[in-house]
Image (cartoon, rainbow, N blue to C red; front, side, top):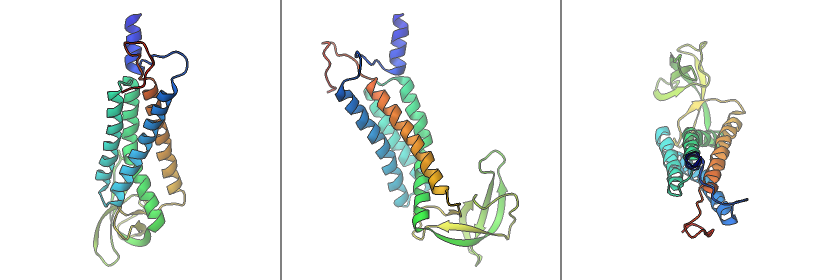
Length: 218
């Protein structure tokens, strides 16, 4: 029975208090949850606006998530809750830069038609089709577009592309009117779940000191 209790403590946190958690602990959980939302958003936005590549932007968000996870390890939060935070952080790392890119291109992006140079099918990927494109004057481009690309598109066809004149984010195919709304919904859903798990991990991490008194950490 004792071993089962210790295992539960290790997985979910000790939560060594009766009834509701103390207000200072709830406050700490709320602070960590808010920081857990702000840090990835700030890192992803700063990386994108700073002209970093998509991979670097994802890495910046991942580092911010790692900082939150490190704090949870320091306060000895439950292993299962920390694992959940890590899993959501892995989902969050690409979502935030994608949201920033969608917002930036929606706000200041310019649209032009480009010529399809090649169409590549990736059966195991999603999306399945990517188009390599060049400008109408023949100048090559590094962009690979999936929006507007598909099985019916052939080399020489024209497709729409939206780009940032300042070059801060990679160009993309022209999206429908709901692209930004979908990106916001997906990112905010993951952020909310991430913040909730951070809050629970902190609130359940508390252990009664050896004196038996209920004192804040530190």
